[in-house]
Image 1 (cartoon, helix red, strand yellow):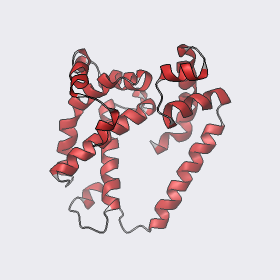
Image 2 (cartoon, rainbow, N blue to C red):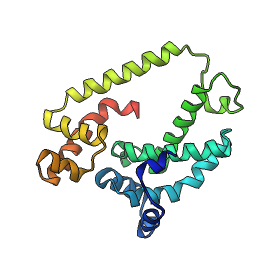
Image 3 (cartoon, rainbow, N blue to C red):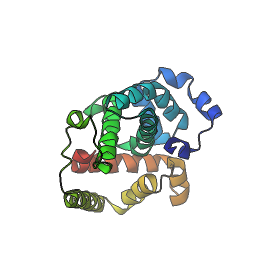
Length: 201
């Protein structure tokens, strides 16, 4: 499954479910974003997985599909943690929105099959596929344009972090700059990109 792509063993998960359990979800997401902390991700998984699965089952997913979607949700949290902003809402709201969007995408992919939860998900399944393609192209164009607004040094750290999925320490080594500089460049970049792309999250 998707979550296992993070190469987390059962022992690693158990180690990650100690003190982190008592942490606020926002703090756990921050640890994932800044430190690529798999223990924090494991704590988020333990905290949210049962609730996410319940939501997926209520939206008409089978038991197996619900589990797959839960894992995809937490994998998305791992990849997109740097996009979360506590000022814009609760961590739980952000995570459940990711899950709901994944379910909607899954329904759209299988839109030739009847689903009882279509009305609940408020989907327009009869929209032409060309619209989806055009929308995706617009999103890609906007992201590329937004990145060009950043100074080259910030573009470098964003690409290494988001595209190549490198930890901050790895970026520091690769670019030969202090870890603090990596974090400050990412913070500046995200602050600049957020108002340009916040409606895409």
